Length: 281
Image (cartoon, rainbow, N blue to C red; front, side, top):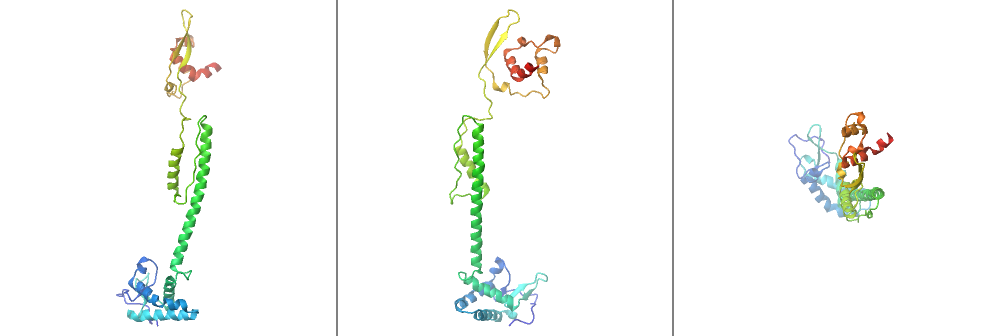
């Protein structure tokens, strides 16, 4: 029987003879809750053998009464009031639910509502979700990098890029995106060896130029080695063919664009930078 007064004294603290109602590890590890499982274990075989709910209900009432009789103030099952901070005795209905759950946990193989069954079901769902995400991740990465390799193959003429096999075994499948990308990049570095860099400028080994002398009108041909970086030096934003011409041949317009006055290497650079503009002019 439940006591008439639900409120317990302010000095009350649950002991091993009281079962705390609630959730969490601290409550589950309370001495009174562990004692409840030991008492239920003595009735579990009988509980699983009775054929009707009426017999099961009778066993629940028996366990509740046993625990209350051993408890101070006949409390047995208590819960802390969140507003007042005091402990209160719970009603028989809540106490019976707690005892029934303890029976189901001990008979986990027979009850879908047992704690063990619920935990196993959550783990199975998480495992299935991880497998689906892993399969989706592999398909996405394979599609992206297949497109990437095709693009690089078309950009780099004359270089052959080996195909990249992006597949993981079930044991080696990445558990998350960073691990998968790390594995993918390591395989890409090991499989792809670019012999030609499409962004590297083509070196100029030699350039043949002709110069015309001013006095003897004789022609001579020279071979000049040109450093490719000579053509990549930055020029001012306002640089034009006319400004370059003025700086090389003099600011006076009367002097004209006499390319014969250029040193051979300066002529090569000037023609490479502004040859088309001068021809159109």
